[in-house]
Image 1: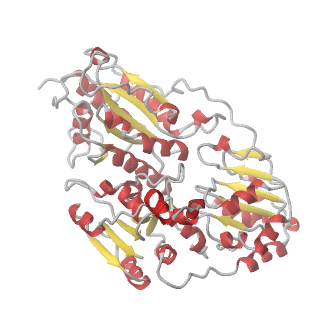
Image 2: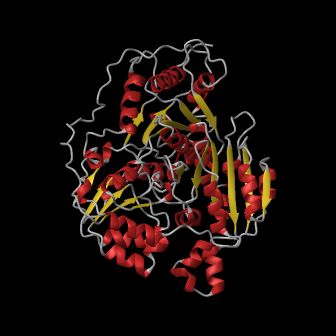
Image 3: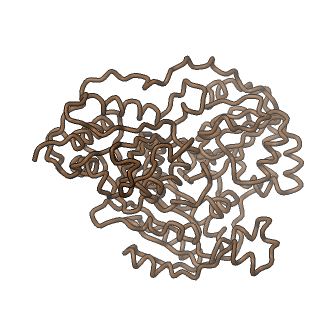
Length: 550
């Protein structure tokens, strides 16, 4: 077979992306994306051909699941200290549209994804060709940059793919020196036209041509001056939201302030952490403490409870850092908003300004976390939290389970908090199974994923891992209480019972064991805290489901 332009360009693009640090590619099958699929099949094989780069290839039938798998791989890599963009390859038409939920989540949570969508060449657009739609602009404001890539021709410039990869990766990883939203990490869309022939051509792999990395047309500006230290006040509070990181704990301890840390903040640890802060803020004693706060420092993006939002809203002085990818959307009354936690916040505290009695009051009022008696979602959440550690990471559904953990998860007494991730960019239940699988594959860790039955059923297709694919070490814990019971605790709970059931809690009557059997995924039902604890204590060998029947 002779090398064709589509195949040659696909190989050149894959090689250039790998050279720029991309190691993971998630692919869904399709004909128009054939050149990329053939290239990745070679690069992702056990014995790549001469000159081909090595990649981690993950194949999923459903593009919606593929998008969230890529998002999870990227998050797993970042949590493991090796942040890299992850590429997704789809064919044309509705396949592209199925990526939108994952793209929206990646946009809001600042996850670098490369969307490589195949399309018809110019001569087949706008003429009624099969499976053709307007793919450019499909993701709107949810991508950092996009390009409509013309079909390759014979004799074209050899460094076109290299230049394209350079700009795409730069836009995906972001430019932290810039002050606008386009500089934050996030998704990038390359809509690539492929002209027939689309099949395997037996072409050779060439090293990417020499190319001087540029700014990709994105101007680089000087970093702003180093921020000043935090104001020294006696009665401050640090609130750690999603993605805050261990820096939130360090800031609280440096200033002698209490730390109110959400479960996915990665900061729920240390001597200053008030683990039972939600119940405390709901109490009269907590309301009195909140009224006496002089300054609130928010690190990360807190979204779980109304008492915390109320504390932020009435803060006499508010300072914000790391407020997610949409950091410019921090509360408008904040006196300062920083993209990251400055080092000056950690070393500039003056011990004489701290008031030990202030922290002692919060500790005394918070007391110890008490797991309620009985068998229910909260007990399941507490048992789940106890299973996490250095060797087992966690992923949690963004509805009821993460809120149960917020009330019951204790603070880690020593070292850093366990890794617990969730799709809190938009706080949706979309793609939770695939996100968890991606975290396991991207990090190389065993993962426990906690979710409700509705979240599980919402993406049951995420259980489908083909026999030729590497299976994640993932244990999915499903708290099955018969529907979306979170709505019973919201303002909708006052509706007539029959209306609440039909349009909110939506009882489903699904047989989860039979569903797992259809996907050939091991299933185990547990009916007590002791049975759940025993199931979680076993090593995670592959993909499995534990159903906690409550």
